[in-house]
Length: 589
Image (cartoon, rainbow, N blue to C red; front, side, top):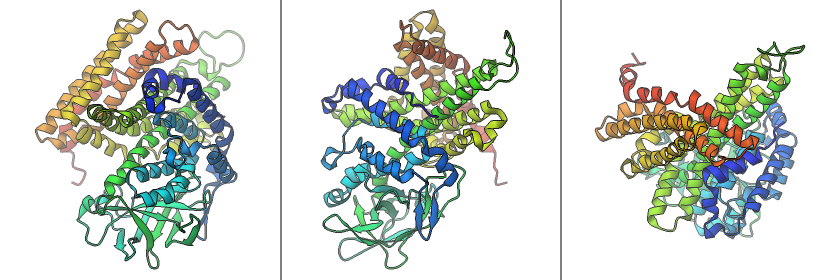
């Protein structure tokens, strides 16, 4: 059974990711340390006691479609009502419409716990929160007044409708169309697929955000507009009116996240689904990216949440399962498998990678908060660029970690891990979607290299490497127990710096294909070096502390430095030297 690691989450927020810097701002003057701890404790309790028991039930029953209506698994609707009654959906919403206006960092921490409890459950509210942010930033006042309070509270849920059968990640190929109506609304026609929580019985209304093209729109992504299309139209007094011309035509049968309804949505069977423009015509992609960037960090946190759950279960199993006799064992009987060195190494890997994912996701949330709170243009630019740089890392690296750690969890269970009864296989199945949706991890690597690396002429990225190098230097000067890890981190950062210079030069010289060929190993190099620095930063924060937690953090940092930072030299070679072979390979021949 899942138990929220509240103390480790709080430590990472405060000592590694920089929550204190956010709370020091006058905007959050009423958010005290005690309030933070109380929120984390209650979020952890809700996750462990109310959401976690739904996880296996949801996996086995799944979401069921009958006659256009989706029924959620047993107990899920009641727990969702408890969720909104507790105010959890409103953590970061604007106070004008009932939100609590808390930092993104606290939302990220709570979201980790809810995803550990049940990724399929947390998915629905995640999309709603993204819809809220899009409407807060881009919708008209009338739309905000009609929809925001209900979405922020969770009384209604939101969706994101991008993908079509012929258009996966290539939004240039979108065919859904919008026609102007005389009353200022629009009529939407088309099909959308892979729509998370497109239909369900959690809420009375569902607010779809839909990308579509107007008849006179420019070609490509410059001609995409964003529309709000509710399941039920809303009367002037706020009550629900007629059913809109939108329906769920199917629910996918998936590898994992069975309880999350992944829907095929049909708009405009009859006269067209009534929609309202968000933002400006032909500028919808900019509005949708607000929601997508929110979702990308949230997906990274999904990887983190599953990794934490898989690690907890693997550790409990390894302490209970007895097999063979460990070297040096005295006494009768077999040893717990946790006593065998290979299992110890595996468990260390799982714990270290999970903490790396946590630090990266929380640091991304910190940058988002700081960009929002910045008091001058220079600071706003700096933190906005930092958030933009960390978003593809959080989305891709943390989701890769989720899959890898869940796979290791199956391995720790041995043959029983391959049997559904233990639950280890579910974690692996659930985690596998996260590197795919919200922009595949390959796309995230391309985004990092072509859009984020060149920010401010590369100085944003070089400045980040400088900050990480300060951690290495502090460790090298902190005494023998830290020095080796500090030296290894310094060498890893040198590899990252060399690869960065190569990438920027390749882009400047027009060798984009070479840069793209090395984009994925570059992102992994970045993630390992950044993760090693964050682990060491956490260990340094506990210097002089004799507690078991401080000893464990130092052990994880030292292990990661010796076992994983060495990979950075090889990854640098993949970036700078392997492009020729990649480009010489032609699978079409």
